[in-house]
Length: 245
Image 1 (tube, rainbow, N blue to C red):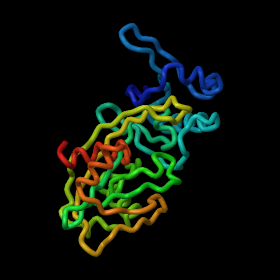
Image 2 (tube, rainbow, N blue to C red):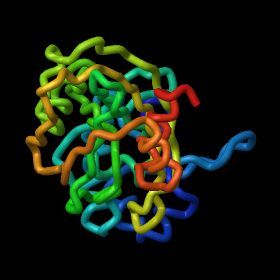
Image 3 (cartoon, rainbow, N blue to C red):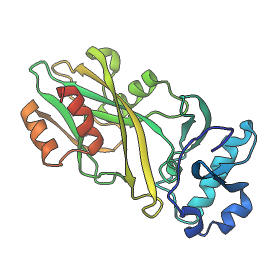
């Protein structure tokens, strides 16, 4: 908890087993036990100090090799009601069980086939897996439309305004254990997904080196690869929503 809000979760015993003595000496964390609730860690700082304290904690965890890949990118930290209460380094969100936001784009050709990407083998998560045309994080500085526009250009080299029939299809709430934090992490994410027609003669072209290749597949081919585990779990859920499963 921080500033009166539940902002994430940690694995039972994580701080103790991670050598939290040093962390707790540097940061005002205290384990509070409530009679009607599970024990929780409370970050006891003023509301305007939560960002600083969370990032200091992230740095301490990084020093102990307990963070995910460090990105120098701030993600929003929200209350259960969706209010942004702070920001924190992206590499720490899964270790601290902080809910993140992502955006995906399903792009299909005029003949109904679907553009998909194969993630680069250098990606820290799910390298070599198939994914939607675009999937990326919503940073703390982004609105959802801004993230959609930026990530569509960086991953697929496409301008959103040149796509046809852009539609917000819905969202997926996704959670699963994460290998980050030496296996103690937990991924919690809201994925908003969009769909659009990619005009003929405008093939995707990756700009940031995070895509190995693109492919244009029939809906049945996409369903088959999802069923065989060829896609990331997140993309599989998004595609299920697109197909109406």
